[in-house]
Image 1 (cartoon, rainbow, N blue to C red):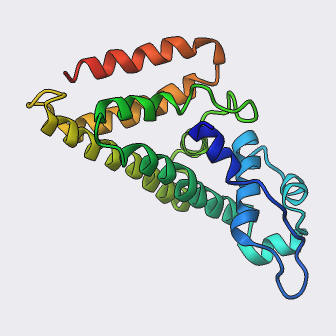
Image 2 (image 1 turned 30 degrees about the vertical axis):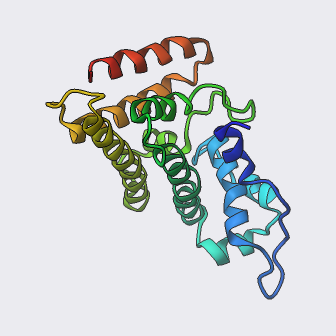
Length: 211
């Protein structure tokens, strides 16, 4: 089973409607909300969409999250904790071939993803594209997500440098930032699923320049 499929499986299960007192699992409800926001984006997602996905009433949603935006901020934060950080830990806990794991980490984000999210890129990248800096609360969560990715890449590049796999004079911190930006752009481009092979070639071309 691929790592992307494992990520997808994080949100499977059963959700219970809210009664008095609260009788639902917040993390699971946010997992279902993540899939709605991921597929449709924030603006195009209606409260009706969220009600149908979570089986919660509007009152339950507002009571727990305050607003649709509040729910979205919590959902995005959980996405970073359960998907982004999960991927970083999964790939970069392996240090025997650090540059291969860097490549695998980037390429796996857009290649061979489940059909349910094929062409939908990444919730973090989509949110950065949709919001920019218009919502400070969301912007803070976005920065945390990209920082998680960049720090993981930075540590793995440092290992590669110690191993002699990349140039001694390479600025690993700058390279990690470059790869984070590259990955974001590739994910946006991956929404056109006909160009996946060229995206993979772009990753290889970039990494070769570090040698």
